[in-house]
Length: 136
Image 1 (cartoon, one colour):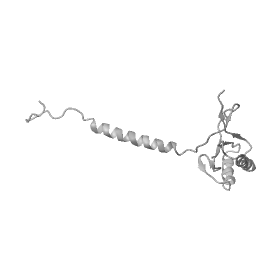
Image 2: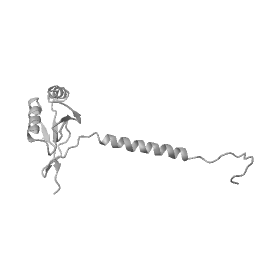
Image 3: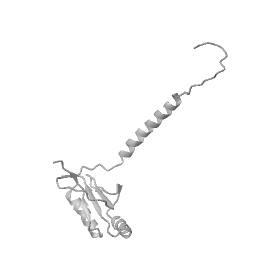
Image 4: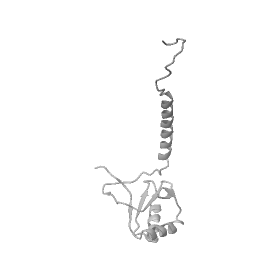
Protein backbone atom coordinates (compact mmCIF):
# COMPACT_ATOMS: atom_id res chain seq x y z
CA UNK A 1 0.00 0.00 0.00
CA UNK A 2 1.36 3.41 -0.93
CA UNK A 3 2.54 5.50 1.98
CA UNK A 4 2.37 2.68 4.50
CA UNK A 5 4.99 2.28 7.13
CA UNK A 6 6.16 -1.26 7.48
CA UNK A 7 8.79 -3.81 6.70
CA UNK A 8 8.94 -4.37 2.97
CA UNK A 9 11.17 -7.38 2.41
CA UNK A 10 10.72 -7.58 -1.38
CA UNK A 11 12.75 -4.43 -2.16
CA UNK A 12 12.55 -2.46 -5.40
CA UNK A 13 12.01 -4.73 -8.35
CA UNK A 14 11.46 -2.09 -11.06
CA UNK A 15 14.17 -0.40 -13.11
CA UNK A 16 14.32 3.35 -12.62
CA UNK A 17 14.61 4.80 -16.14
CA UNK A 18 14.64 8.48 -15.10
CA UNK A 19 18.47 8.74 -14.96
CA UNK A 20 18.72 6.98 -18.31
CA UNK A 21 16.33 9.46 -19.90
CA UNK A 22 18.25 12.38 -18.36
CA UNK A 23 21.55 11.12 -19.76
CA UNK A 24 20.04 10.57 -23.21
CA UNK A 25 18.60 14.10 -23.29
CA UNK A 26 21.97 15.57 -22.35
CA UNK A 27 23.66 13.53 -25.11
CA UNK A 28 21.03 14.69 -27.60
CA UNK A 29 21.62 18.35 -26.71
CA UNK A 30 25.40 17.92 -27.02
CA UNK A 31 24.98 16.24 -30.41
CA UNK A 32 22.68 19.02 -31.67
CA UNK A 33 25.07 21.77 -30.57
CA UNK A 34 28.18 20.14 -32.07
CA UNK A 35 26.40 19.26 -35.32
CA UNK A 36 25.50 22.92 -35.74
CA UNK A 37 29.11 23.94 -35.08
CA UNK A 38 30.47 21.47 -37.64
CA UNK A 39 28.18 22.68 -40.43
CA UNK A 40 29.14 26.32 -39.81
CA UNK A 41 32.78 25.55 -40.66
CA UNK A 42 32.15 25.37 -44.41
CA UNK A 43 32.93 28.09 -46.92
CA UNK A 44 29.80 29.92 -47.91
CA UNK A 45 29.75 30.12 -51.71
CA UNK A 46 26.92 30.96 -54.05
CA UNK A 47 27.96 29.19 -57.24
CA UNK A 48 26.98 30.58 -60.61
CA UNK A 49 24.26 28.68 -62.44
CA UNK A 50 24.78 27.02 -65.83
CA UNK A 51 22.45 24.89 -67.92
CA UNK A 52 25.31 22.84 -69.39
CA UNK A 53 27.04 21.90 -66.13
CA UNK A 54 28.10 18.28 -65.65
CA UNK A 55 29.78 16.10 -63.05
CA UNK A 56 33.58 16.30 -63.25
CA UNK A 57 34.25 13.10 -61.34
CA UNK A 58 36.94 12.84 -58.70
CA UNK A 59 39.32 15.75 -58.26
CA UNK A 60 42.47 16.00 -56.24
CA UNK A 61 42.65 19.72 -55.51
CA UNK A 62 39.53 21.66 -54.56
CA UNK A 63 40.09 25.41 -54.81
CA UNK A 64 37.48 27.88 -53.56
CA UNK A 65 37.36 31.66 -53.74
CA UNK A 66 34.77 33.37 -51.55
CA UNK A 67 33.06 36.68 -52.26
CA UNK A 68 35.87 38.52 -50.43
CA UNK A 69 38.44 36.93 -52.79
CA UNK A 70 39.94 34.74 -50.06
CA UNK A 71 41.53 31.58 -51.46
CA UNK A 72 40.94 28.13 -49.94
CA UNK A 73 42.37 24.73 -50.81
CA UNK A 74 40.24 21.77 -49.71
CA UNK A 75 38.45 24.05 -47.23
CA UNK A 76 41.59 25.48 -45.60
CA UNK A 77 42.89 29.03 -46.21
CA UNK A 78 45.96 29.22 -48.45
CA UNK A 79 47.96 32.03 -50.04
CA UNK A 80 49.14 32.25 -53.63
CA UNK A 81 52.74 32.05 -52.36
CA UNK A 82 52.07 28.56 -50.94
CA UNK A 83 50.58 27.19 -54.19
CA UNK A 84 53.83 26.12 -55.93
CA UNK A 85 54.92 23.94 -53.01
CA UNK A 86 51.47 22.37 -52.44
CA UNK A 87 50.93 21.66 -56.14
CA UNK A 88 54.44 20.18 -56.48
CA UNK A 89 53.76 17.82 -53.55
CA UNK A 90 50.43 16.71 -55.01
CA UNK A 91 51.95 16.23 -58.50
CA UNK A 92 54.70 14.09 -56.99
CA UNK A 93 52.09 11.86 -55.35
CA UNK A 94 49.85 11.78 -58.44
CA UNK A 95 51.24 13.11 -61.75
CA UNK A 96 47.82 13.51 -63.40
CA UNK A 97 46.40 15.67 -60.60
CA UNK A 98 43.22 17.61 -61.40
CA UNK A 99 41.76 20.77 -59.89
CA UNK A 100 38.21 21.94 -59.30
CA UNK A 101 37.82 25.70 -59.01
CA UNK A 102 34.76 27.05 -57.19
CA UNK A 103 34.12 30.77 -57.01
CA UNK A 104 31.28 32.76 -55.50
CA UNK A 105 29.03 34.66 -57.90
CA UNK A 106 30.28 37.94 -56.42
CA UNK A 107 33.97 37.08 -56.80
CA UNK A 108 35.65 39.45 -59.28
CA UNK A 109 36.43 37.79 -62.62
CA UNK A 110 40.07 38.84 -62.35
CA UNK A 111 40.56 36.81 -59.17
CA UNK A 112 39.26 33.67 -60.87
CA UNK A 113 41.55 34.24 -63.85
CA UNK A 114 44.48 34.81 -61.46
CA UNK A 115 43.84 31.40 -59.84
CA UNK A 116 43.45 29.64 -63.20
CA UNK A 117 46.71 31.20 -64.37
CA UNK A 118 48.52 30.13 -61.18
CA UNK A 119 47.20 26.56 -61.39
CA UNK A 120 48.27 26.25 -65.03
CA UNK A 121 51.64 27.90 -64.38
CA UNK A 122 52.45 25.29 -61.72
CA UNK A 123 51.65 22.39 -64.03
CA UNK A 124 47.99 21.47 -63.60
CA UNK A 125 46.40 21.54 -67.04
CA UNK A 126 43.28 19.51 -66.16
CA UNK A 127 40.86 21.66 -64.21
CA UNK A 128 37.16 22.42 -64.10
CA UNK A 129 35.07 25.38 -63.01
CA UNK A 130 32.40 24.36 -60.49
CA UNK A 131 28.85 25.57 -61.23
CA UNK A 132 25.41 24.81 -59.90
CA UNK A 133 23.32 23.06 -62.53
CA UNK A 134 20.37 25.21 -63.49
CA UNK A 135 16.94 23.60 -63.33
CA UNK A 136 15.33 23.40 -66.74
